[in-house]
Image (cartoon, rainbow, N blue to C red; front, side, top):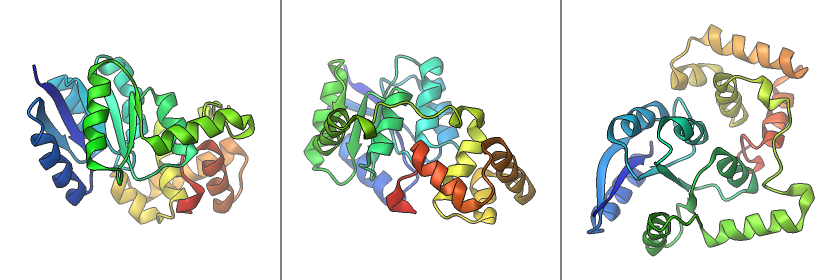
Length: 221
């Protein structure tokens, strides 16, 4: 029986390449394709795939928020993250969100086949580079990827975290508003509320907080 898969990625070239690769596997059926987080949730709810191939950075809901929500929406669906980010912050967030696998986008083509086979057998999968990151975290507890986020992050709503992530990535207010389909005033209100809730009084402070919380890698700032 074919493994039923949904692909969620907002980069069209990557999307097309992954689709062609998946379609070359005789035991894999691509049920649907999505370009943002909300679409991914809707597709999973409707089609109930065995595997969701999920990018982290997407418009609207990011991949980590999608993975967290799938725990209740479709617990039988396993999430395989396909990301360009190998930093421990991203790996930590993904593991806490309950993903079953994490594959780096620029890894060998054959690795996707190995990852899907691992998930089909009920085993988690991490790219070799990611496995080293996790091991280093255990060897150096001060930077362990399994260390939970601080309580401050829990004060923020899912929307506020999304605004914060985009802000930390250097997006302007108008771009954030367009990406999240919000008004500029709403984005500004979220920013002001976050500053009050976190007792942070400038944007650089918010960016530093986002890095510490693992919402964005320092390499992207």
